[in-house]
Length: 103
Length: 410
Ligand SMILES: Cc1cc2nc3c(=O)[nH]c(=O)nc-3n(C[C@H](O)[C@H](O)[C@H](O)COP(=O)(O)OP(=O)(O)OC[C@H]3O[C@@H](n4cnc5c(N)ncnc54)[C@H](O)[C@@H]3O)c2cc1C
Picture (cartoon, rainbow over the protein chains, first blue to last red):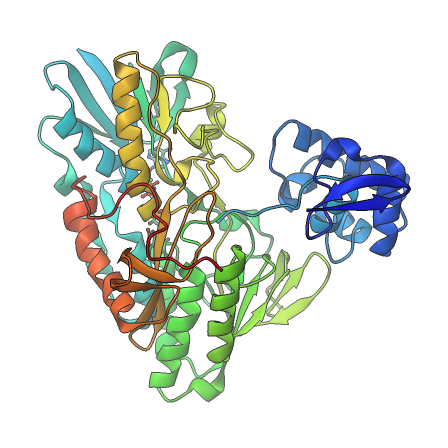
């Protein structure tokens, strides 16, 4: 764990750069993390980010499949919004932990 | 008489029935088990069928052979569980009341969840080896195949026996080498995961193993659909991989009965406390085996370890005591790696697979995360253990809780 300053705020991040505490998140932090990933955030992005945050608060584990069925965005759309990292990048920008797949 | 009902007579349900039969006072408890089918399949054996190592008759036995005398056995599809009323409705119209219920309905493959999968190439050039039908059809195909692109694809998580596709490509590599046609077969391992396996250390070791065998790992490929005319698989971000034979682990899901009962998550896995194995919704419902949504492997070995924990908690619940036992997610898998060798991995909720020896520190005989002949014999021995010890609910000389003895931290 390390402390990093993102958008002027000190936040705790994991080794992979995911926020450790989702309550330290705000929209400017999201924009700055997104910029590092070469993503310009639109309203549609924020709709997805808020969905991810809400489900995480409710204690659910997220999968691409679940997001695709959420009615917020379909899987193709999710890939368009977050190329190469539909769940990893969106989670990072949403300030929630790195998605784990359990097998 | 008080009633205990078990739903599903596969690995987990059968094992638990035999354990309970020995443990419970039979003047006090009436035991009932329900399944839709009369045949028990040794699923780990499916893996060997495409290569002619096992035949169909090596992996099937009547379920009846494993039920103790004096329990009620019902063969019928289950319609749904009505948790509020402590009853189960069967499709044949029967209604079963229960004091305690154990759900062990496992997970099943759903090829229809993927567009273009169960289409004109199904069981002609596209196969699964997760069902007896798929494994047998693939064996027929391999017999006179002249080579080309063999693509193994993992389209969704979770799926049972997470190492089976790795074993499959290793066995295929050995099979085509033995037939003197390895140079005519390109094998690739296509997965939605970021590497050969999810847990980092095992992923690295297994990834290296595949590379050594000239099996190409293509990670981060999330399958959108199968193009039957062009014979290629297409991902959501529009990458395409051509195949001559596609082997796939179709999307795995729990029984629709779980959905109808309102007890499941979006993949129909029962919402279960990962430590106590109790349903999150009803105190007198417990879950064992692949049917549970607990974050560990869906494997027979996990069900075996979990069964001991379930027994303790169930006995406590029957006496109205607090649940004493906590499951740690212990999983233990032999990995068949071809050419008569095998590896073994051992892990739980907290600890990822680590190198070392098992079960005796420093001695083994099985090398953890190492590729040895001894591990291969472990896998072959497992079939005997499965029929004669595991299903009958007898003890194995391995602890339910994982031990760190004999392992190296990395
Ligand atoms: C190719 C392959 C290789 C494997 N290799 C290994 C291995 O090496 N090691 C290992 O530990 N595990 C391995 N496994 C996994 C192992 O077989 C399963 O994890 C194990 O069988 C799970 O037991 P279960 O009782 O939960 O489910 P199952 O054994 O699948 O039993 C579920 C039962 O419930 C019944 N059922 C479901 N729904 C209904 C309904 N609505 N009405 C009535 N009945 C119903 C089914 O008919 C079935 O009999 C492998 C699996 C496969 C497919």
